[in-house]
Structure formats: structure tokens, C-alpha cells
Length: 200
Image (cartoon, rainbow, N blue to C red):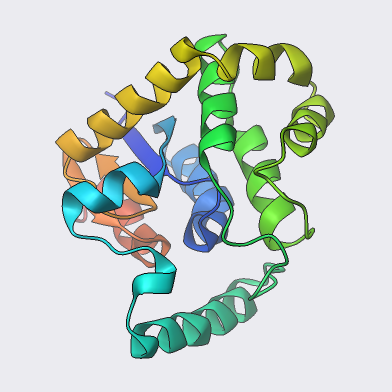
């Protein structure tokens, strides 16, 4: 049976951005399916002991910047370490993506476009007009999706996604669940692949 990866991610996370395309490539290589589940860390962190970036110790913030300079060079992925529009509220983007998913769209490309907008293109992903333009560029009806996502049902989808993530043990992003086994962080993608091949 093909393996299934449930992928919990924030659309404003640099670590999600760095691992997003690689996850898709790994899954395709091994015939695995990916369930894309956008969440917001503003809901996950308070329940699981995480702290928003500004509240972390200076030493942790400094090391984060070291890693954010190191990984893009290693992976060959363009990334602005301190983008103009960060931190940004990831909830509108998550609601948009979850609404597109509910309408039957594959949201892999949409998610990557939103991540790239923040981390490589200096665009504000908390801005609804920006999100509409990104969705349109992905071949979707951005306005219709936003009209639906910015409603109570749109927020309910996000709440349910966050509850699902927490129930799965997620406390940070990106989080990959492979057949019930959790992996945290884009630097665990090699282990995800080994799990898919049966080496783990």
C-alpha cells in the first residue's frame, strides 16, 4: 500500500519554505501521498509550550539567524533572512489554502507560492489583495476563495486543522506524520525518506 504523509505547516515559516518542495519530490520518488494541512503556530504554540519569535531568548534568536543563512546556501534556495513583511499573520493564508483544499484543489503549488512571496519576494502574505493575486497566479479564483475563507466556516476549517495537528503531537512546523510516526523540521526530511523506503 502507498504510504501517506500528513504534513502540518505554517505558510509563514521559513523552515516550511525550505522543505516544502523537497517533501513533494521525496513523496513522488516513493509513490507516497501528501495531505497538506496548513496550521497557524499562534494556535499550536500556546498549547504545546512554544514561544513566538520575539519572546525567545536572544541566544535562540541569534542561532536561528545562523541556521537561516546556512540552509539556503546548502539547498540553493533563495531566502531573505529578514524579510520586510515578517512576522506576518499566517491565518488568512492558512484559511485561503484550506478553503482551496476543501474545494478539491491540490494546494502544494499555492502553498509554495505563498511561502516564496514572504521569503523571497518581499510581499505581505497577511494582505488579502496579495493573497488574491497569488491564488490567481496559481490558476485559482482568488477572490471567490477569499470570500469563502474569510467567513466563520473558513475559520472553522483552520481551527479543526490546528486541533488535528495538536492531536497528532505537533508542536512546531513543519511537521511530517508518516503512518503515525512524527518528524519535526525540514532537517528531518532525510529520515522521512528512510521511513518511506523501510530503512527506519
